[in-house]
Length: 156
Length: 265
Image: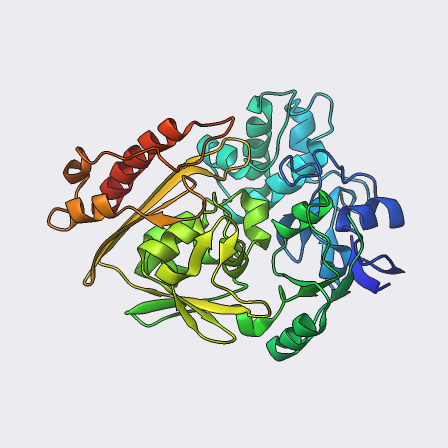
């Protein structure tokens, strides 16, 4: 069994895991970071999106061993050390961009990623960029508004 | 998912050795098809050889006449490449429309081609642009590469190193995406080059194929109007819960005309 080491939310971690361990299992079961969700388990819903070396990926479709040495950020790593929410988290709250909340961790991680590539996105861009994240409650409308608010807040 | 032995070789040569030594080894590049396949227990390889981080397989080189893309170059990298966007904008657009942003951050061109999913995007570009697939053993012309459903000319142990695309005069790509998976119900890539006109269809048959009736019609007039009267037969086309063979045949015409409009735009 391989030993995998990586930096998760700024902390160095290392564990011996089965070869077949998925990154999402490693985060949830080995590290107890249950903010990253498993929704569809078939790479479609995006509830498991995390950031690996600066890129949003689906943690259910990646082996923990593939991220050896990587810098990983999960939803738990977004807020500041003093607990102040990331502007995207705050914008989701302010705009009621969630109902049941199951998709929210992945949605927020994908939204943060999309602003890196599109700092001032229009509605169409936001909807296209969030194609890999499914929400069955909101109809996406308030999610789009939240991303636009966060874009403005982060541009300041 | 059944367990397997995971390996991450440090070079292509080591990957070749590990692949040949394994009882039933599979290469892991981006894993965006392989891992879902394993999770459904549709495959049970003894070993996974991870080539996804081999720097020697990840590059884009353009020299004005051709664009060469390393096998493990991610879809997102191709989509964002200034060189690809300048030389073959339709290819960058195709890469930017595969799956979703997270899949594009992992999925690779070599993985897509080696898998030859009937609904994958890249095979249409490779076939229409007349690309060459360079492997650890030889160079394979696109026309000789796709053999059938998930079947290619690759031999056991053979690894794709790169793909070289001749730069065309004009090219366009349009797909009708399955709304949940973003795979192609039908995708059509059209290309006009010094060597002639090529039209390739993906999503409609067991693997990507050329549409010769359209190629003939477009030879003297590379426009959407020139293929208005070309009939596409549904015989042999895929049919599933999402789309009948007749509807796919219809979409081949619609997507081809839209791709031509884009190529001429």
